[in-house]
Image (cartoon, rainbow, N blue to C red):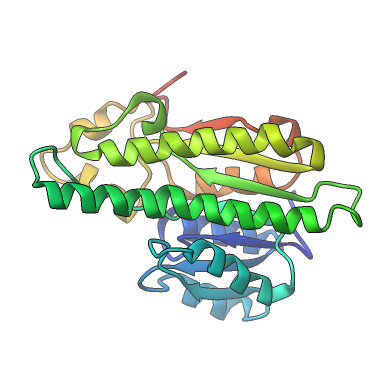
Length: 257
């Protein structure tokens, strides 16, 4: 049984899908959670009603804004005074065919990179600085970062999702660099690379005419978001710190490396 009593975890994009499932798993395991959302709090409201404001803090944050990641982390510290783990889950995935105009192309690419890459970089930098600030007083691990990438980082994506695949590939390189550079300090970084997951973002796979999107999955269906949340909790638990830098595929064997 995994327990997080006394620990505080920041989960971005926590209002629905993978983020909401992860928040539920962490709360059930005793963690205090800071959950961020961009537009609507979604399931965070009912989760806060169930666990109380002392266990779950809700913060609105548009991670596409300059420096938003830094501001979110600072606001999160105001909850319990420290952050023990960071879950980089928030991301966007607009459809941008190569046939769109130059202005739309540049706008979409800038938006994807701002949310999916720059905000993760800024949150991770803030987390690293925070974890290091406790180094002199702690003799155990200082902090853990789990980042949600995608199988697209390794196999590519559809032609209208080039920016999404590129952003997820950047996250892989970023987390591997953090893992290599900070393991000696007790700071660990992991990646989870889902395929299709049963979330609003993946609803297109269930639309008529798109049956081929799910037929490629040997297990037969998209992954429940709870499976991603369970893996996040396991990696944050400290039960497998020597796996730092590793990527964990959860895609129903649709992409096997």
